[in-house]
Length: 382
Image (cartoon, rainbow, N blue to C red; front, side, top):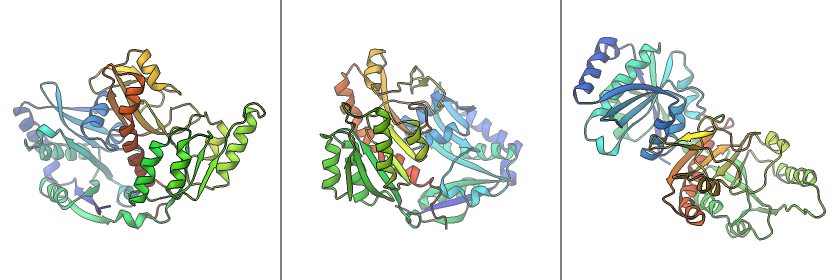
């Protein structure tokens, strides 16, 4: 994984005073661009998911956002003063008093030749200054080209070089739990084999005798593969839940990831493993209390939680489905969303949609676990 850099901008510079910022805003408006500030805007977050991917919409949801639009179409955005982010690269410079987080910043692909990114960055820094910050931290910048951009546009300077590979020890000890064929588990296994994830997959637990996930795990050389099956005819639900908890607890995982695990976990299990992630086949809202979610086209659909999300979406006539990786809480499918992607349903059947979602699920599974790895409390920050 490539090296990253933390950059700092001195917001006390005259480049970010109110008068200069107003001039930059007028320059943007003269080009037919409107600028507005948005906060906790579901439609904006959905556009970010489609236009840029990654975990940016989650960061935008926790920030103030300046959005550039032309003729009602979003062209660019920048997130400012994010709150509650847990990435390891924020624990040094980001913790200094008077420091506001700048970014992410994104320009739509068909507007990147317009040169609007630099002006939006200037207005963003000026807004941070208005909010009372003395310095802006631009975190985890990848590549010399981006560093040079921020140096030219904002007078930024590198204050910290980050080698993510140095943060990969100790690797996170993880248990994966699956009930089916295990294609999402395979995506995880493949990423581990390519050394793309700093995790030690200690075990795979399945709850069905015919679960293909078990064979995939054995073929990949996973050290411990366990079938913990509910003997419904002779065993109570409470007994099985206690046995499952004991099976996973013996493995002493730092994190547990559910990849198509089709058994509702009881409250004791959720409480025992606070670093518990779940892949869910629906586009979930960033607000865990919300019962609906806004889509990239501005429409709204129910948040399809539960075991039959795709089927429920089709039954409701939804034009969209999706996939999300979220933290597991006591309330079903209402934990913090780490990563999500929407997909237009286009009149396809349940099986067709499940197939279309599969590569999306594979991608966000790996990306979300990587994000989680960089949020770990045990990570060594150097």
